[in-house]
Image (cartoon, rainbow, N blue to C red; front, side):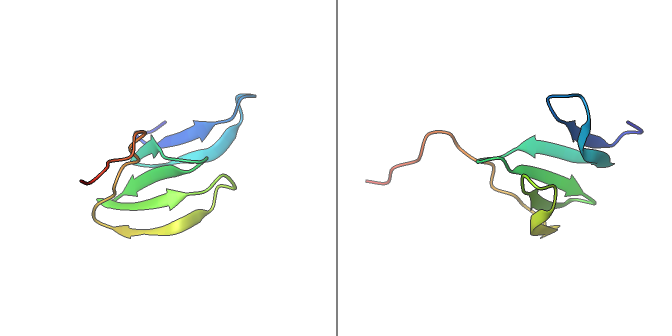
Length: 68
C-alpha cells in the first residue's frame, strides 16, 4: 500500500499497518522490518523488540550451522 508493507492476520485485518519499506518473516512469531536502510525486529504484539537502528540484519536460518 503506497509502496509500504504491513502484515494481515488470518482474518484479513491489519496486524501491522503498512508503514515499512520492507518486511521479512523471522523466527518464533517475529518479523524483520526495514525503513531508511535500518532494520529492527517486530514481536507478535506489533511492538519492536529490537529497535530500528541497525544497518544489517541477520536473517533466520532454519537449519543451524554447525562448526567443526
